[in-house]
Image (cartoon, rainbow, N blue to C red; front, side):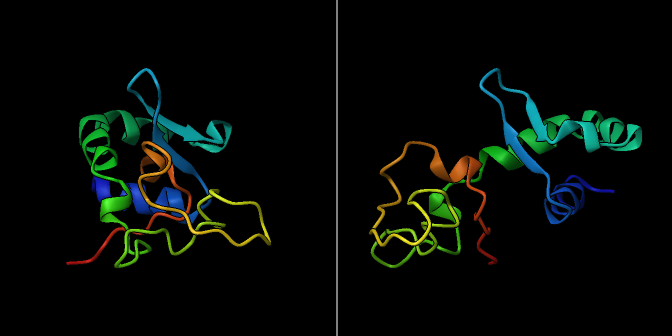
Length: 106
């Protein structure tokens, strides 16, 4: 399994994968990971960290042409049911851990 497919598989199955404050790969809920998945994460740690570091609002499909978030509720930037225009630069590093992040396909 490649780092890209591992990351996609974990996210598809409901895991949150991020860079922790200490610079490690963080996966939650961690207790749901199998021993084989933990081994794969360790094996691909460097590649996963590089891939996660590239994440950001600048690389998200939801960023509009005027640099606002097209999915602010899903991104956790506004309360459910509320309307707000959220500039992608409002919250530093918001895109890095955004649950709604979808990478641009080029």
